[in-house]
Length: 511
Image (cartoon, rainbow, N blue to C red; front, side, top):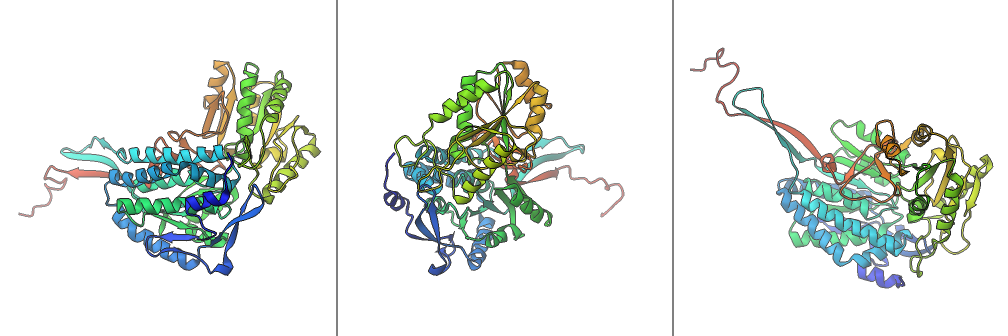
């Protein structure tokens, strides 16, 4: 899908120089011009636009605005809160193609994937708007006569959302829309690697707040440095911090939040996702699914397939099918015709990719395909399969954000599940099988220890109707559908005495 970058930026309201902070009390602001930073387009390695980073004084203004607005927002009926989120979804849908291209420019994703991510924002708005009418509590039976008990959910306060570069729109929507319908105001701290999507979406959100008469609900805080971002985590006035990113930073967020009793965090950190392929599997289906799981978004999804654990009797045939599938996937600039996979986000990601491959080869791994950086402007690498791996290798124990997968073999399903679970992360998992017994074993308490399990499909791809998140070092947080909304509210047990009596009526006489 050919397009001119400047035309897309103009359509989205992204300028050559953009402010990195917004709240309804004071509008847009940022640091002086000489402190601006560049957005580097990963497809070209060149600057696309510049951003005036949010400052300490910007943060002070934003948090005051969020606190003040939340007191009013909490008392707005939840279905009316849903109308604001619904309006954001409508405006995003009206600008779907432009925003999809902005995501592609920001991240290097294909336009197809950028459009799909914006589609998830629209879906999440619809889900949250509907959920705003279903923030259910429940009635309980009291042990006291003529008393009524029930359970209800109330707003928390200010929610801080810290999102990573790989999904610059979807993570904000998953967290921000649920936060808003639950009566919280939202401060969004996106990755400075992908500022254009955040600026474009904030502009749309401003219009939605104006259209519905609810200012102050959504704010943007986009500093360049981690030290400035730390303020959002440290600030005890922020009741909830939802963090998406590395386990190392997630641990710091959890420790900081834990020092303030009553605050909470939702963590969605690293994944080291594996798919088991047993001897009954449809190998061609598995190869196609694994190709999407490994190569989609250039392997820069937290749910990307990192390890394939194949039964030894089918291991070589599976690798052959995977090599064939990978060879049919065109890598290129999102603006190139038929480009399915784009670049990595920056040069640091390329170096991590190269280091992981070197380590695996030195340990005895065999490069079945790929393995190199592509010689062209931007940050492109070949989709890579490394076969004949061993589960204990360090490179298999950590997450490498790149289109890189390790293939290893197993004899018994119990051995496969042990290999599958014997990593620190626990996000997404999968099995390819035609055996009901093997599938059910994998889905049982003795099977996958991850938050997400897939059968005969890739580990990537999330339905917004399901709760999204994982276990162990992935962090335990849940966003999106199911009952994930409860994480953005506080629970209250209520008891009402309508009897006109007390337990001490026979002891106390006030007549």
